Structures are given as C-alpha cells and as structure tokens.
Image (cartoon, rainbow, N blue to C red; front, side, top):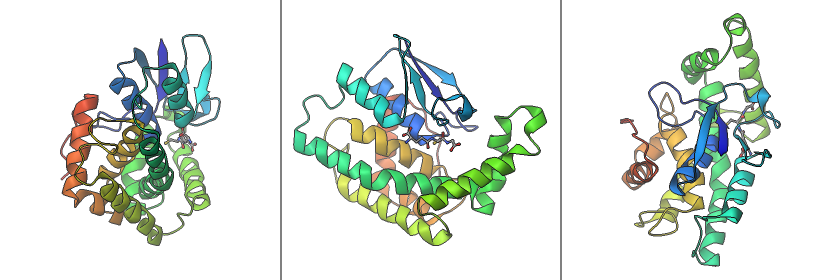
Length: 236
Ligand SMILES: N[C@@H](CCC(=O)N[C@@H](CS)C(=O)NCC(=O)O)C(=O)O
C-alpha cells in the first residue's frame, strides 16, 4: 500500500495545505491507485524535512513530489500514457515555468504578508504541541521568509511573477478542458495543485485576483476538482 504523508488540509478545505502534497494526491486519485493518506503536520519527520513523502509497499521511501510522480509513471498505470512526446514536453516546460512562482506567491502571502500571516499562524499553531505554540510559529515564519527570499520573493512587487505565471497557464489552457487536451495528465496534477492553493489565499493578492478573475481558469479548477473527487467550497 502506498502511504502519502502530507500536511493536513486547512479548515474548510478538502486539499492539503501543501500544493506539492495535493499534486501527488490528485495523481493517486486520477490513476485510482490504492493509497492511504497520513497526516504529517511536522515536516521534520520527513527524510528531506519537507512534505510530501511516500512510503511504498516494498518499504522504500521517496521524497519530492516530482520524484514520486516519476516512479508512479514508470510503474503505471501512467497518466501520460498515449500522450505524444511533444505534448508531454510542453507540459513539463509549463510546469518548470509556473510551478515555483505560483507556489511562492502563495507561500509569501501566508508567511510574509502580515495580513496573511495573522490567519495562517492559526493553522501553523494547530499543527504544534501545546507547549510549542507560543514560540515556534515565529521561527517557522522566519524560515519561510528566508525560503521565499532565496526563491526571488522578497517584497510584494514579486507578486508580479505569480500574475505572469497565472496568465501563462490561462494561455496554455486556451479553450481545452485540460492542459494537454481532453484528459487530465501529469501537467494538470502539478499546475492544478498550485492553482487551488492560490485561489484560497486568505487575502487579495495580485496573483489570487488574476486567478479569480479568469473565468476559464475558475472552470478549470472546478473541472479538475470534480475528476479528483474534491468537493471544493466557493472561493468568491
Ligand atoms: N520540491 C519539493 C518541495 C516540497 C516543499 O517545499 N514542501 C513544503 C510544503 S509545500 C515543506 O515541506 N516545507 C517545510 C519547510 O520548509 O520547513 C517537492 O516537490 O516535494
């Protein structure tokens, strides 16, 4: 049995607080792989100190969402089965361009923006033992501020990178139901997970507003959610 260790969902949402976890969970659901989700609020328990991580039936462990998906694709049933190589490569290039700027837009708004932190702090506290709740959130926040800066998000001006990424996803989707055409593929797992993280950002950031204002992307989020069996609450 595949065991997916992931951050629990924030209150009221059916998806993990970590888009990288959601990416793997969506993949497992779309390929109907038997799996168990294990709530892992403390990433220090992971061999890489990040979520997600997966333990396989053979006892092996893989961290990093992309490495997990690569193994699942190799073992099959593969989500990209039958997809022409050029389309698969286009999907990979899109993910390489948009995954990180959307992720760091969401992370910046949760940990660096004071307004977002006021709400997100409560989620962080809830994952900690009582004794650690008064002190540790500030250290976690600090580490995420450093992580954002190391990835080019030092001020609110960097939200522009998230807006560009959202616009790029919209252009890549066009009028198709999914990013590579008629069926959800690996690219959809990667990109949808980031969009769904961003769309529920607590306060109005430029990337969140760009996403919420794009009817095509809003429909896409809902369409993929239905395929994955996620009952998404309204975000408007
Ligand atoms: N490249 C990794 C990134 C994973 C990642 O950044 N996970 C975040 C949650 S979304 C994490 O565990 N953060 C904990 C920390 O930074 O201490 C993957 O794709 O799995």
